[in-house]
Image (cartoon, rainbow, N blue to C red; front, side, top):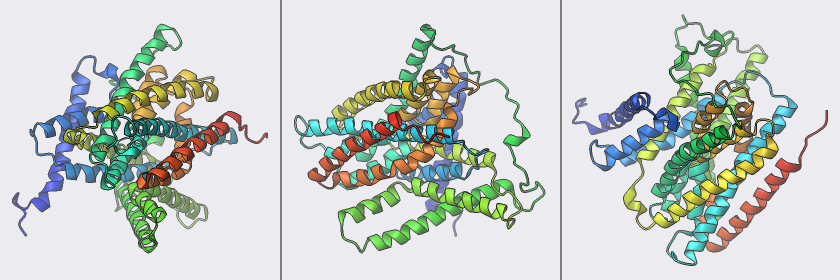
Length: 459
């Protein structure tokens, strides 16, 4: 076998990953050393993504879009699996579960209202000035704004295979714009709150030295340092084994569904592979439960899961996902799509902000401003965007919105599953699209009713 540079199959993928990592290090230096850039609250991975996009578009580096798409697809699932395997430090109380479930309902209802207004725009354009537009393109607004480049890439690619030329780049462009909205609108609103003395802004110093405790790195009965298998190796093996098991299960059900010649079966297959991260997270949750049961029964003595290392695996995966996702944008394919793109981005930002402003005041009256900063940053960018905004108002996370978000994401996975099925059904026909549109509205109203009226059981 030839191990030299001539063997492109051997070296190509590693070279592409090396370029991404080099760009990430460069972006981190730029963000730290450029005066005023920290105040924009732009995540380092987002800066790296735009640098990579610039280098690719102007052919400064040979960054291959097909490799970036593969990286985006896999890293989102790996990141979700790693974070789902993390063991919660304490069981949530009944009241905490209630607010967590309502936070999950809020997250999904925001996806729904983004989808509703996105579809209003795409349908209106089809029946007026853009009859050739892919009518279901409005569904990509919540994928880009609400869920980020990973899911935007998956659904955009699926829609492109269904006839939406430029669908993948359209969705990724919405995700990239979502980061800009989160950081610019979020910072403007943050300064508005400060001027009105509604919050006491305490700047977060990224250069400040934090002294971690030993509990942050390890739990009781973990693998000893002297063990033959490294702790980090165990975490990587757990994550990749769960991913492999997810692939095997999805393949098994796909083979069954292929025998059923129906639109519903095809839509379920699309959900299985297009949203692999969700099934990976569900399987990771089951594995975590099995490990907990084995330890409780005394059949497993060691604590093989290390929360700190899993968090680092998840963080690295999401950083690489963001860079690769933004870098995959193809501006040539956006030709003719600028009108729906601009309209969806503007309307999406406005409706997301005002909906969250209204509902957060009802759900989180005591820490309303911290909640809207965190949720707006998350539901237009990603969770790190929301955390960066929150840190400016609550640098020590004294309000419970972060724990509400973490618990809420778990509920959102279940509550959002019907929406994923509907996203696959929407492009099947015009009639089906309007049915999906109606279901989106009905489901949104149902979640809204739950958030505003359900009080839980009195204890």
